[in-house]
Length: 102
Image (cartoon, rainbow, N blue to C red; front, side, top):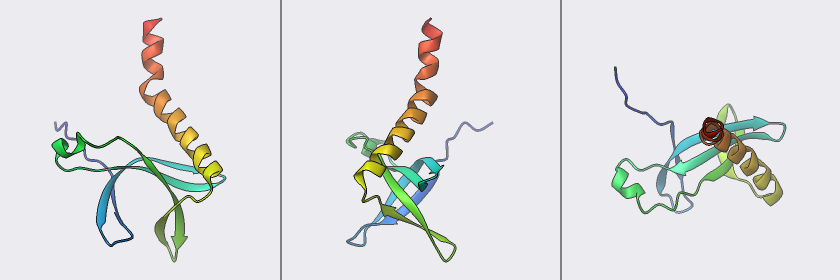
């Protein structure tokens, strides 16, 4: 039995043409659309040590059957999606711990 974790990765191209790999943390779909929550991916774990641990949220658009990711320009929408992600993340990783302490 293998205990290897294989992350879901997506490669984005920066404005200057650099390819950057991201791991998909979550996909949120709601009335406002579809959103990917991403963090930078490092194939070498030592490279991740200096990463600030910030996540990024991109809105998904469908162009001729292909998904394209774009930055969310509306700050209020970005905050709403971030809150959904953080609630889901915290309930997944932290809420169970507090129940065990009772």
